[in-house]
Length: 270
Ligand code: IPD
Ligand code: CA
Ligand code: CA
Image (cartoon, rainbow, N blue to C red; front, side, top):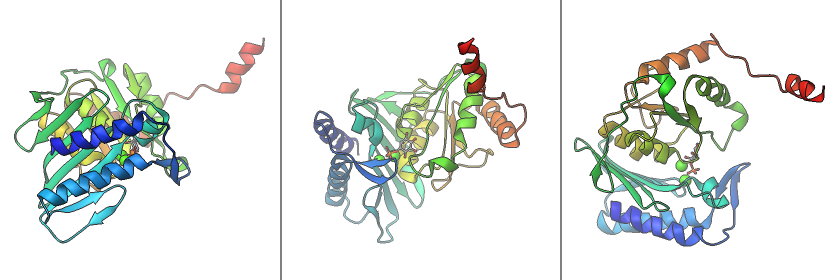
């Protein structure tokens, strides 16, 4: 699995060095030839080794034969970054057996970092065991989030971004949900959340967080499911506090108001 991800990552790097043409799936939903070529490569390799397995990939959709094994493939997570030359993206692959994720890898070819996990066998970064952070307090934590590229006007996340920014060391928005999850797994981040992710974004990263000792749930504290529209991952220690903040924000309680830009502009003028 990691050999396939590494090969796909090398292919992405070949395209990354060129000025790649951007196409649009939606107003701000980008796709490039690299996304498609990477998925074709991954599907070819899976078919050659495991011809009976089903595959759900972002670009080509679901190949469903009713197999007990199903792969979840994001051939390029972080396409917007990739298309702009911003070096934060990865290849994400996960394998499920009877609806249970049994293995996952995310490969970041810009840093040659291979995150990998197998159910019950721990999580690894370049074959060395990784563990979530030991940060106990939300106020001392560094967390991350992301914003979707479609139906942007309907997404309330900017409110969460604002409030959580004021209650932590900061909120990063690096542009690859799969890598955000891996960074929770190896302790670079203490938590991550996002609305409306797809199974190919989360399948591998969620297993990596869990196998690294962290927690992944929906925003209410219910079990995370691959088709869930809510992803809240953490080191476990700040999970309750993050979840509490989410409940407060959803209820509109104790919100710090956004500063009014007109007041700011008026002050500059005098
Ligand atoms: C996107 C990235 C981004 C997240 C978006 C995803 P893509 O995946 O993971 O970080 O905020 O919601 O759609 O389109 O680059 O594969
Ligand atoms: Ca993605
Ligand atoms: Ca993608």
